Length: 345
Image 1 (cartoon, rainbow, N blue to C red):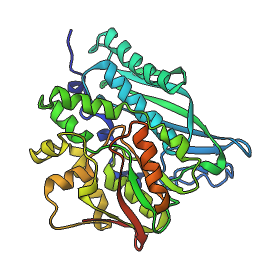
Image 2 (cartoon, helix red, strand yellow):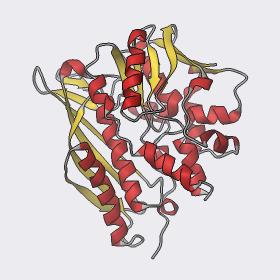
Image 3 (cartoon, one colour):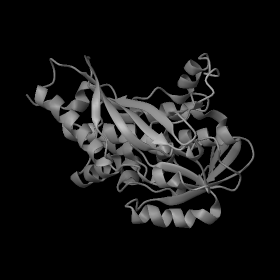
Image 4 (tube, rainbow, N blue to C red):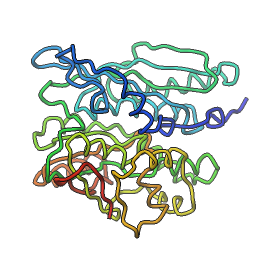
């Protein structure tokens, strides 16, 4: 029995996320965990993971991430989902130590070997990260779902939050944009073999630089760009620090053929939902066209680290990122004093 995984789900990858504005509304009534002084990071700033201090030199990072298939190959789906889940640990500056699998599968619709391949793909990424998949939980669900609970460790003084950026910080994006656009083309059988290879390489590249970035005092804030798009995750940085970001669209790194596919009209539904969530906090130059708008809001699955660092450290960080295989890492803008917003030229 041959089944296309993407045909079994209504969405795929981080494009499945609840829209940011709706999520803020939902969480608005959830009480903050103020009675736990060792909880260093909770839900208050919409950060990538929770962080709990164990002692003076160790804090535990805890996160979970799971979604429906973004590709049809079972092994590749597992790899992408696991890489994406571990990214939240790296984005906090931590080193992963353990993972648990989250598995929901339509047992009557999928061959057991397909499910095994999904789990094997996830396990292969965890092995690459040097950690075990030590257990998990599974259910019979109408749509295929896979992901991880990921635990990591970090020094309490080296946690990199998304709300500690400073005026004058330079913004570095470590991976190319356009995963959502490429996935939309894939679903319509319009993505070339080379395009698929590029998408797979990006979405399965572990964001391991987060570990050494945590050791740099010149790195003030960090997050990873995923389902809310570049604008959504950058707005999180701006809101947290009460700063304004200025971006130059021409400087944004794009995955190969992402621009071409975007100009042809390939876009995800999540892109429009993201745009509707930003409101007046985003100002786009009138010269930018609709396809450019779509890339700015494009939901990234297992996207790159977004780093706010002092200007004098930026070139050194870029050089090391390039040396470690993040060839598209580039400076995309800067933070200034002003109302929390993103301005794109």
